[in-house]
Amino acid sequence: MSTLAFNAVEIAPRELKPSLLELDGISRASVEAHYKLYQGYVNKRNEILAKLAEVDLSAANQVYSEIRGLKVDLSFAVGGVKNHEIYFEHLGGDGGPAAGAIGALIERDFGSFDNWKTDLKATGMAGRGWAWTAYDWDEGRLANYIGDAQNTFPIWNAAPLVALDVYEHAYFLDYQTDRASYIDAFFRNLDWNVVNDWISSYGIRA
Ligand SMILES: [Fe+2]
Image 1 (cartoon, protein in one colour):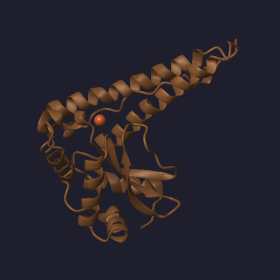
Image 2 (image 1 turned 180 degrees about the vertical axis):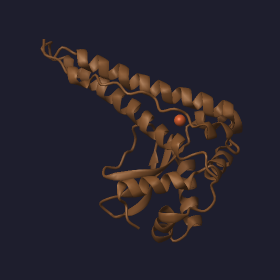
Image 3 (image 1 turned 180 degrees about the horizontal axis):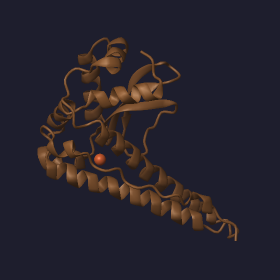
């Protein structure tokens, strides 16, 4: 039997940083429930890859519709893993204006920290799932991108540095339908040191 067995490599969820349980304006209950969703995406990813590994390629043509379904679901699960890993990792800080390399990049590419914030907030209000600030390697600058789901709309060759989750599950417990107040709280909890570590490890130059 011919299969895609090499796919079945498992990953484990990252641990939740203790500082995430003491955020300003985003409750512990909300973060704990949200973290469970993230664990769910990790499990889903592992499950889908295990299924892909067992697909019998020698079966009839319908094997491709099975692979299609699994691969599309995989993009959603992997998106859910990656988006939430950025989200959880760069929260737990004191917010405030961006400092260091990210501060310089924001200033250069948006004109001011307030311009960046206004644009990302508007993108988050307009999106159905995500708003990201990413460094686009081809353009050599930062841009704010919109996402409706875990797997829409990724931009190739761009490294996400800020991931704002605007799915209802991120704020409904604390803010019901008041997404704007949740986004304000998100900004208050950003850890710019984490973002600056990514900039340095990726080799992004201001
Ligand atoms: Fe989420």
